[in-house]
Length: 277
Image (cartoon, rainbow, N blue to C red; front, top):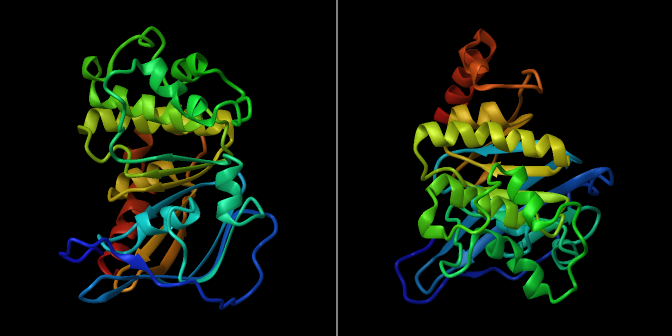
C-alpha cells in the first residue's frame, strides 16, 4: 500500500455515497466504504465498495491475501484512517465518537510495551494518559493480567517476558478502558506455533467472558476458522468483500476440534476461496 517515498501516503478526502442505511442493531456497520491513498508518485485504492455488518458480541476473523485491506479496515473502524467515501458506524456513532468514548481497544502485531515499565504499569498506561477521563472498567489492571493468564508476573519487565507474555500484556492494556469493540491486527503472527495455539484458546475464553465485539486479522486459515464465528474473506486490488463464510462449529472449542471432519472441510473451503482472492 505504501510506495517507496519519503513522504507518507495521504488519504483521499471523504465524500458521500451510501448504498443503504447502516444496521441500527449492529456493533459495526460499513456501507460502500472506499479508502484511497495518494503518494507523490501514484494513488492506491486499498478498499472499494465494502459493506459489512458485525453483530454485538460477534467474533469476526478477516482473511485474505497481502494488500487486500484487512489492516486498513481495522484502522478505519478505529478512526485512525478516514474513509474516502462511504459511511461507518461503531456502536451507532461515527468512529471518532466511539474512539473518544474509549469504546474501542486495539491490539497490534507488535506488543509495543514500554521497556522501563512493568507489566502492570504498561496495562495502567492508558488510564494515566486519560488523566481520569477513562471510565472505570469492569476489571482492574491487576485483574486483567490475571484474566490473560499473567497472575504473578505483574512486576516483570518486557525483557523478562516471552513474546507470548508480552502480547498478553498488550491485550490486557487494550481492555483496561473497558471497550465494547476489540480490534486485533495479526497479534500472534510473530509467535511460534505452540504459543500461538495456546493464545488462540485463551483469546476465545476472554472473548466469551467479556462478550466483546471482535475483529481479528490473520493470514492463517486455521486461526481464522478456529477463532471466528464468521470469516470475512477479502479480495485484493482493490480490497473488497469476496465472501463471508459462517463457521458452523461448537462455540465451546478446544484445539482438538481442528482434527474433526467439520473443521478440516471448513479449512479446505477457506483455502479454495482464498486462492480466488
